[in-house]
Length: 373
Ligand SMILES: NC(=O)c1ccc[n+]([C@@H]2O[C@H](COP(=O)([O-])OP(=O)(O)OC[C@H]3O[C@@H](n4cnc5c(N)ncnc54)[C@H](O)[C@@H]3O)[C@@H](O)[C@H]2O)c1
Ligand SMILES: CC(C)[C@H](C(=O)O)[C@@H](O)C(=O)O
Ligand SMILES: [Mg+2]
Image 1 (tube, helix red, strand yellow):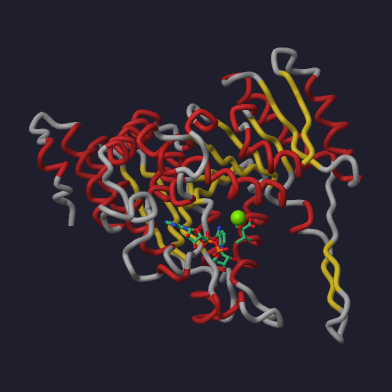
Image 2 (image 1 turned 60 degrees about the vertical axis):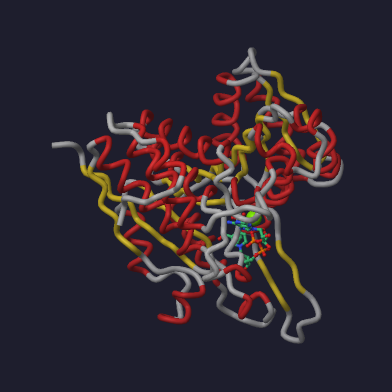
């Protein structure tokens, strides 16, 4: 009997449930093809949880995640809160609390290009072709988690940015170790010309670099990095950065690949891990079946890697590439001829199923005919 893996599923708000649905469907196919046992347990979080319970991260959801082998998360956020700066309880607080409680200090965001999508990017082919960046974003410290204050008249507010040696050391080691397996370069993106916290990052990263003599460490101010990401993305191999800078430059980097709907992420801690697209709840698309599910599906591939199920993760990535190279994509990637969220998910799950079996039927896959209910 193969091991039973407990996967907590938090679909969240907006397009979160639609894209997560495709990932779960595909993980079920993976389980049947590779003979794994996945147990999916659902939890409520974000705006949906506030509407139901008043709490963006109910205790049961937190416990479910703590007791799982991995968490698959969709997205949270709702205009009802975004458009009300006075709201005291917000969906995003649930996500931040979950990251903190699970100790998910490293958020890893891979950025790459697909040959058939290069024309889709507004950037020139020769600039973006072959881009392969791994962003290591610190996830549970910095300005997101320092003291916050708004005075009672609503005329004065602050958010404090704090970093400790430990916060920096643990993620820096992961970034350097990853760089050793890649092009052996870490770029620390900071604002060390202005911020004390950034100078602490530089000092500690210079120390840690001594332990990795095969890796080059360079530095770039975040304002310049925002420009170089567009002008010369191939400068970067591994980017190491603090919480807020990582949030911003990773959305910017999505322009290189052609859509934010392609970008997955893994958030890793000592004992827990969570996998989520880098995009948000895209409320304008909710229920329309137009959201690109690939970011969520590739997050599920990172989840498989984390569980040590490498061959299944590879198969899943190969299947996504096949869908993209076959132009079987959602509207964000092809305005003229496109497929729904579920059709793209079905195409990928069918490819996994049929290409692993002797009766593989390319035409069936090409037509996106689902055999999965
Ligand atoms: N991790 C998260 O849950 C997360 C991340 C970012 C934003 N948010 C929340 O989401 C809400 C909306 O935020 P936003 O509009 O700034 O960001 P967003 O990422 O939801 O959407 C920005 C734009 O990206 C594109 N996009 C996003 N996801 C896509 C997909 N799967 N397929 C195709 N295109 C896609 C759309 O053009 C959309 O207009 C807010 O409440 C915000 O707080 C949540
Ligand atoms: C929703 C928000 C709290 C979140 C963040 O800023 O970390 C999001 O933008 C992300 O990138 O996951
Ligand atoms: Mg973000």
